[in-house]
Length: 191
Image (cartoon, rainbow, N blue to C red):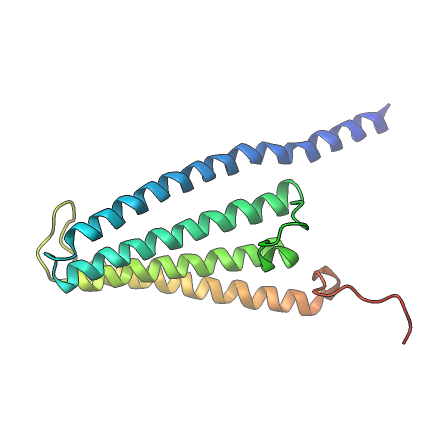
């Protein structure tokens, strides 16, 4: 009787991974909305091309890059998270399957996400450097040197965290190589 309860509980726990699927669908919806925001930003860029200063144009382009990087981050979370925690993706016959799906694991996802966050943080920091000391624009408060200092501290925290994650993954894969997915299938034949 106890074994049946344990068996049933294990199946419920294993099935619970599917509770994450609606979260990934929600992130896909957020990606669609980000595409809409990107299209609006491209339209805005086209409209201001002739009348904008180089700085305004640069800021609009940085906004496009920022949106693209966040969209990439969402894609990594959705595909990587689903494939790692919910269900294997059956994409063997798909010609444009990303290479990173072959050897994805939670550690690799963490490093990719952290690296993306560093990139996004870099874009925001660059925007702040451009705005520091300038009068505030519509919808944006003035940026002070103290604001920049805190943004640099936060950015460096992302950088150090990413490096520590990468080093810990490297050490773990060297210490426990059996946990690393092989890039090639070993041959059973003795040569």
